[in-house]
Amino acid sequence: MKKLLILIVALLATFNLSAQTYKVGDIYDVNGKKGVVFEVSEDGKHGKIVSEDIVSEKVTWDKAMEWSKQLKDGWYAPSLEEMNAILEVYEVLSPKMPKSRGFYWTTTEYNKDCAWFGAIRGGSRGALYKGNKFYAKPISKF
Image (cartoon, rainbow, N blue to C red; front, side):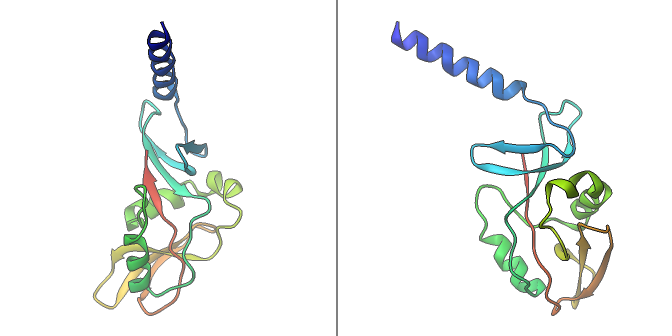
């Protein structure tokens, strides 16, 4: 009887997790992974989040890429395409990310000396010398 009850509880928990849907701007907080949804599938069950809290200190592009490789739990630095997706909805995201100010590196290189960056607040983007010091803010899939 005890095993049956445990099985029922586990099935209900799985059902509740799989039934959860999200939209852009929602807070995703599952199993210790927390962020703001910036991209979502049509069914609302999968997508990408940007971290509310995890951020590097101001670093060069090379240091930002090293930092992002050390992240755990599926967090990684965004590409220019992913940064553009964040910037497209930044007005929805910004109230949930009040600490997100300044420029953030992307993994996308412009050329051997320059890389792309974006500003979550304000929506600007561009490519600058990799020796400049900006922040790195990770994203993750869910």
